Each structure stands twice: as structure tokens, then as C-alpha cells.
Image: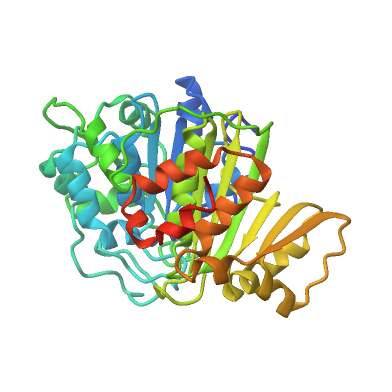
Length: 424
């Protein structure tokens, strides 16, 4: 294992993805880049199962959307962070517009396209980048359609650096140039799937096939121009119109605390968690917040996970919460397994929901506090009321820190004034 690889790569023997991953790691180590300064973004496809093998930050997105995710991060992160997107040939054609827009804006990120000529996870169908003559499961005599010339497209869109390479040869040099480029860079790597491609193209050499169809190997360089980044004003406007949070309060927290707010979609759980996170920032804490909810907006559960820490947070996942706040039956149902698995901490629950559920917690170090959240505040305000109640009774943050964030947000006009009188 290396500084970047913490688990063995999960690819099949002979898979080109393994070579691409190893050479990517080799170049990052040669450049002496800290793994914590790298964000690796991937999506659906064999290339994307690399996530658990890496010591970097990783983000896994929807099929074809990894470039959009990577571009959003690259536009807002500090210049010393390195955003790398791994995407397959299928995802690249699905998300072609994302590629072109990132190149047009010259967003500072590197996209590595694993072009193994087919959709490897769904049976081996050809993609929009499959070369003519390449045999696949549904075209056993060879693909007959011309591919998109992806490198030419992104070059013409405005990319700073583009390279098409094979898994051997000059791939190392191409990766190094891409990582050192200020602006958008793309490397298309031609490779074969060892399970679905090589068996049908046993004696075929991709270099020869590319030459036959006049698909150029090598590099293209664009005009030198600044990479695109969001201004400070742009970044602030993305956070619900709230400007940068200034530290003006303090917290009694020692160390780190993981908080889960478990409610229902449409009842303001995510908004309450965002305001709570901003209140924690105003207390000088390091904070992460992520949400989980079904695709049906306004129906089902809504869970928000917030980590507070006196020290920087390297990983935003919560293996075991220290505090769980339950404001709805749907929230309880969805998170009951995690609550039962707690070994220590406190569950703060709406009293009617908890008593009706008749849940017994066996762990002696898990306390349960029941309060009337929904009855006192109503469905829409139960989450924010529960957070105010919890921090008032525990003193983990000053109540004023959360009240200030509420009053700066448009949500305050939907909260009955009498509710605030309980938190002087």
C-alpha cells in the first residue's frame, strides 16, 4: 500500500482501470501532494469502485454527473486543492454537456476518461466513444458507428490541456501535465475491459484501431487563460443568502460530537440542521452537515447528520451518533437500527412518538429525554424547536447563536413569535 492507497484496488486481473489508478497515484506521490488536498470524484461504472481504496476525499455521484460535481467543488475550493474526476466512456457521453461547460469555463480540474469502449456493468453495450470495428456483446461483428471525438470537442470548447493516450506509453507524462495545468484538463485513456472486451477482441490492438479510424493520440493545448473560480460574493450567495459566518460566540464542547436529526420530509429538518451548523460555526467550531431523504420530495423520512468538532474534520460520516433528535415517526422508523446500536449518548425524542413506539434501550450509557416537540411547535417547526430545546438544556452552544441564525434567515417569518419567548 502507498500513502494514497489504503486498500487493494478492486479491479479484475488485466483491467486497464488498475493501470490508470496506479499511474494516477504514482504521479500524485511524485508531485508530493497531500492526500487530504485531493478530492476524487467518480460515478457509476467499474472505475467508481475505487472509492474505498483511496486515502483522499472521495465523492461518488450519479451516472455521468461526476464532472458537474467536480466542477462545483473546483470552482469554490482553495487553489491548493486538487479535484480529479474519474469517469467512464458511458458516463462521459451521458454527461457530455457537463464536460463541455467545464471546458468552456476552464474550471480547474482534471478529468480522466476510462474509455474501455463499452458499458461494463450492464452487459457490454457500446458507448458513444466506442471505436468502429470494436466488438461488443450487442455488436459481435464490430461497432459500425463513428464515435464522438471527445478530445477535439473539449479542446474546441476551451480546455487548457487535453491528451488521448493508451494505458502504457506516455500516460504518466500526460497525467503529470494535467495535474500541473491551471484550468480544465482531460485525459482520455483507451483501454479494454478484461471481462467483456478482450475476449471478443482477442487479437485487436487499440493503437492500430485508433489509427485506422484516424483517431489521434497525443495532446492538444488551449490558449493560456485564467481558470474559472467563484468570487467570495458568489460563494456566500450559495449558502441560503447568508454571508460568511463570523465567530462571535463560544461553545462548551470538548472534542467532537456527532448529531443526528431524524424527522420527516417537508418538515424543515434540513433547514434546521443548516441553521444549527451555522450557529456552531459562529462559535468557532469545525462543522460538517449532510442530508439523507428519499427522492420523493415532501414524503417519507428526512435525516440530517451534523458533526461538531474543536479540531478539523477529515471524514463527515457518522458511524455512531452521540446525540439523536427524533421529531417524527418516519424519522424514528428510518433510524431505529442506528439508535438501537448506540453504546452511549442521548436520544432526545418527541414524547408521544417515543412513548407510542414503546422502545426499550438496553445500553446503560444511552439516556432518553422526551419532550413535546410537535405539540409545542407544530409539524413545520418541530426540528428547529427540538434543537433550541436541546442546546438550551445542555448548553452545548449558546441559544443566542442559533436564534441569531434563525432571525437572519427567511424561515423566521414562518415561526410564531411566541415560540421564541421560550428561549430568552
